[in-house]
Image (tube, rainbow over the protein chains, first blue to last red):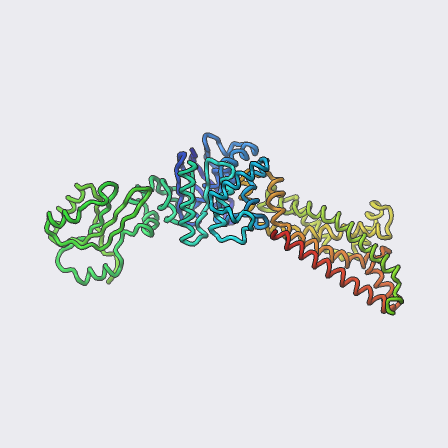
Amino acid sequence: MIEFQNISKVYQGKNGEVQALEHVNLKIMDGEIYGIIGLSGAGKSTLLSMINGLEYPSEGTVLVNGNNICGMSFSGLQKIRRTIGMIFQEFNLLNSRTVRHNISLPLIIAGEDKAVIRERVDKLLQFVGLTDKAEQFPDQLSGGQKQRVGIARALVTNPSILLSDEATSALDPDTMESILDLLKRINKEMGITIVMVTHQIRAVQKICNKVAVMQSGKVIEEGEVFQVFSNPQQEITRDFVRTVVPDVITPSVCRQIRMESKGNYEILRLKFTGNNALGDLIYQINTKFLLKTRILHATVTELDEQTLGILILQISGSPEQIAEVEEYVRVCGVQCEEVKCQYGF
Amino acid sequence: MVFNILPWGDIIEAMKTTFFMVSISLFIGTILAVILAFALVLTNDGGLWENRYVFYGLNSVISLIRSLPFIILITFIFPFTKMIVGTRIGATAALVPLVCFIVPYLARLFENSLLGVDKGIIRAAKAMGANYFQIIWYFILPEAKSSMILSITIGTISLISATAQAGTIGAGGIGDMALTYGYERMDVPVMLATIVILVVIVQSVQTLGNYFAKRARNH
């Protein structure tokens, strides 16, 4: 378990003090894939680097499996670091050395036997699918292959935790997907806890179980990915989530509604979660209330192996009738809110 | 025909002397410069052993020596030379100013090579649990090696030209030969021959340096 207790970090900047982190409290359980998302400068990388002691808090405690990272001797910290792998946005591989040598490095500095290193590296090369690239040099590889080398290097010491510092941010979308698949596999097959710092909500959506949203050094929202994505509380979270789970009507649809619609109508955003995600609510509304409904927007997304459906409906009818529909929808256990046309004049 | 009028014995002797001065001072100079360059980089802002006083101290001494032309450096450190090798003239005596000249020069070049190593690699090394020695040995040196070889190449060529000036303290060598035969005796063929020899030596050093630098970068 990784625990951040009341972490603050103050830098001495050119124009006085800079508060990089402010009273951060987080708990990361074993076996989780924990995403920390935020815009650049939110303090997320600083927070991540405290787990393996690359950065120290000005205030507060970091506990990794019960060990206080800040109060540790250098040799103690070295031992802990060998149980924590780390991968980076810029890969940070030695360009003057072969792929094999790069992956071997953590074991070489741990003073491991040559035969053991060879066997272990072969196994990992196979795991990341780079067996045929062992004797090549990093600059002969693509970005995705370099990150695979970085991942193999991070796993070669059999760590229990993997830290990912924007590891997919420099990759093209297809490569990002394949690296995320690999991370998920590592988590499932090896049971390694993954802490992932990113500004890509897609990465969180695809593999994380839990997420913390950071802004200006503070955690502003935290919880299960499904909870946070289906019901974001903060503006910045909503903006992030919207890019992968759209829940607004497009401007052109808005314009059309304003032009076409006469009489009373209401636009409702329905959020289906869990079991009711694939129900027959629309059919029920149509047959039960005999109202005209029109689907303006619909998405179904899988989050952390659960389904989230978002449906935006235009319902025409008297205010009383619409209120009844809303009541009925809520009774069915579906989240429902009214939306206004936000664009188009 | 031209060959016969050249004093081959003297030329060979001069080449030996040049080789002696360059190789010894380069060997000692490289070792000292590597230590000095690491001291600079490690104590600089953001280095592993950040220490303002050590950094500025070393930095000013290096800049001070670097600002003296070699011919002035030779005379300036006469007492020091005498103290170390017991004499102020000859090839052995020239080693002292040559080393004093090349150490700060190479240290600056090496400093650049070391600063060229990506900070991210050092971060990765720390994250793996490497200690300071391991960070230098397994991460910084391999990455800086290619650039450092090119620095040594430049240093070698500077040393060859510096040995010519060491002729003023009777050090001999190929450059000194060009001065005495060519300038003082107006012996044009000998001067031309020394020029050809110098050009060939410098070109070979550069080619060798480029080759090894390339090999260190990849493969």
